[in-house]
Amino acid sequence: MRAPTWLPLPVRRTLRVLRRYWRVLARRFEVWSSPARRSWRRSLQLRVVALTLVASSLLVGAFGWFIADRSAKILLNRAQDEVQVSMRNKVAYAEQQLTTNPAARDPKLPETFSLIVNQLADGDPTESGGSVVSMRAGQFPELPSITSSNVDTDQLITLDLRREVSDEKKVARQIVTARVDGRTTKYLVTGSPVPTSFGHVELYYLVPLTTEDSAANQIRTTVLATGLALVIMLGVIAGLVTRLVVTPVRVAARTAQRLSAGLLDQRMKVDGEDDLALLAASFNQMAANLQRQIVRLEELSRLQRRFTSDVSHELRTPLTTVRMAADLIFAERDEFDPAVARSAELLQAELDRFESLLTDLLEISRFDAGFAALDAEHSDLVPIVERVADRLSGLAERVGVTIELHLPDTPVIAEVDPRRVERVLRNLVGNAVEHGEGKPVQVTLASDESAVAITVRDHGIGLKPGEERLVFNRFWRADPSRARQTGGTGLGLSISAEDARLHGGWLEAWGAPGEGAQFRLTLPVRSGDRLLAAPLPLIPRDRTVDETAPETTAEPSEPDASGPKASGPKASGPKAEVL
Image: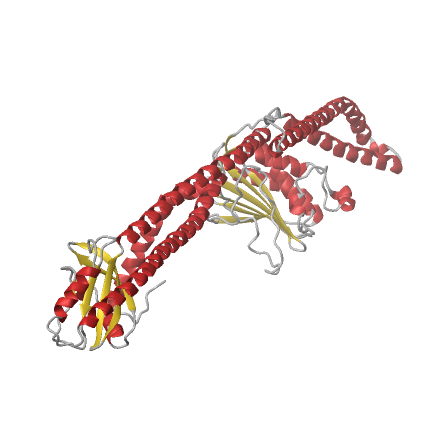
């Protein structure tokens, strides 16, 4: 956020420096607190113990404050009650002694004041049990103020207290803290008028609250120590209890990770008959069931792969014999009747289709058995794309489709298997031509420092939402009735996806109804590198669909990939060629 322009330039510079300094501090704090935040997110035991400590600290703190405050008030109230009783007795004694002096100008009156004060005071005036007594004749300034000790009562007997006692003629008290004999002491000061025959005299009784303060401090210390010990004990108990619950959960998590890694014989240890033991037993039962199901599925998959491989190989020999006979009949079809000649042509076409299916099944069986190997070499992808377009130009002419090539002017070198890349492009371009609805098919090639990408774009019927994730399934067809006449075996895109995965690349699809479809093949420039982004976007830039319409894109064919970006740098200097 920028500083307002109406502020002076020095102020704006200062604000910019402060914002920069604040950002640096925030970044440093984030780095410094990163381990703690990571531990907080990952440790359930830490969160439970921390929350227990916080909650118990608040509860124990509130309870301890209440106990300490209540105890201090009880001690103070008891001291006030004792002082009140003692004050009544002292006032009665002083009133009795002053009856011997009927006049304020009696020369013996100061001596009587001194006798009363010394008689009523007791103990050390700075320790509990001691007191200070002071008598003052407010109406008679000529009479001196008598105090039982050398304590400076002017700082203890405040003006407000004297006003209440002298003017309102009532008993009043205050708690005053003063420094006496080099140490701070709290006093409970009580004042009361003493009725006499010549007027009234003020009697002040000052009692130190040293014992009460000491007792209150001891109570606070005891409550604090007890509360701290209780909080620590609760934290330890919470940690132990949480450990009892979290440990089996952690064991279950580690066992689940081993199971997901393929170690199907991993089991949890069952101790006791409680809920945790029931959890472990249930987990072991689930793991055993999963192991049986996985083993069963693996066996079925192995049998299926072997059946496919065996059938494909076994059909090779009779297919070769039938192919030889069919080629002979097809070569002599001109000498046959029209009906027989047509039958020979149909036989030849179906044998081609059957042989293509058999070839695809053999290739799929190699991928399933893990026998597919990548024969990578540094190759220029531009001639490969041009060769695929040339070979499919005849099919494109028959269906009225033009193939537009957008290729860079310079060679695009990558470490790939040329045979497999050509097969992938042949499947993609062939599908685009067949489903292009007579509209142009655009093939674009681009590269950057780490990846090469080839997109094949058609403007046909497109894909419905969700179909872009199904097109790579085996034997899947968007329109089975139409695909049975013009489509292939239904294995081409599956094989293409396996070829892309074998390279460590991605094969993705995008489509929208009425807008056509686009397939993107992304391969690493160096074999074995991990892809992070694609040089070409998956969603075409020239789409005319409404921006509010939902977009659908296929996930990468590489299961471990974090996912490609939707856009990347454009190819520099492409050239367009129409076939």
